[in-house]
Image (cartoon, rainbow, N blue to C red; front, side, top):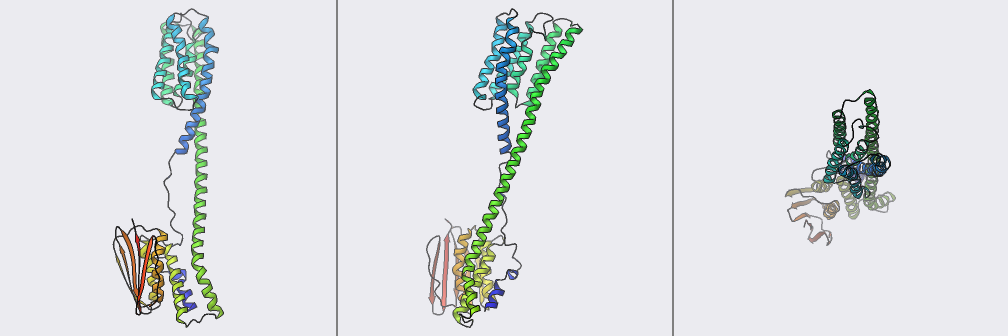
Length: 392
């Protein structure tokens, strides 16, 4: 009987439906790009804070002296105040590290471009791109503050600002070589510095995204490792729980404490074999796990010579692993005690799942209450058992 038990429960004999005992790893949906978006928001918030301070410092330090050095009308004075108001308005969101609302961005861009046009139009001839032209370099920094995270719109605005200033400069008179050289130096220095800020922001943004992706991949790897370790632990614990009853049985058989010819010993061996076969089947990757586990119990009984008929009705319903164990546990006990014949039925409806068996066992399986209700009774030489799980 000990040899029969070992042969019955050997994994190699589990049949063609047996697969890798490891259950299929399920891929879970991960929020794509969440870490990258957070990194992008952090980079833009930090750069905008720097640009806010820079803009607030540049206007009074570099623009106030040229503005006061020349006479200006009321329109020019208002034009000088508007960029400062735009900076203060942006500060409401920038200091809180919040993105600028689209209306604030659109209104601010229009305001500073108009300011540049008004200030440039008021310049005297031959003063463009010179000390008196305080607006050209200043307005570009405001555009950076407003459009740092909208690079196409930023480049378009900077190009429009440059075209506007050059057009007004050319319309004011024919420049000589010195003025052209001076204008080229000013435009090149201001434009290269501002475009350098744009390039630096893109480099920082790419680095932040890469760092976020690496951190996210490490976290996913750590999560997968933790899940695999937990799964392995649970699997070992499940096998240990079943082997806890089997190993003492094998030890008693080997030591001669139990008589293999005794009916009780044979029934205990049959029960252990059925439980282990059901445990192996529990870890198979199959479309209908409950039917697969019930069939595994039936196969063990058939190998002992018991004629078992199995009837399955109803469409498959999802049944948790612990519930399947509770449903098939009494079935394994009844089949292990069967002598010649048994009839097993599995009924599945929308409201409940029911496993029943009638076997010529003549033993009491017992009753249980809880998520799975078990009822059993003996009728002469026959045992009837029914396990019921209500799905709702």
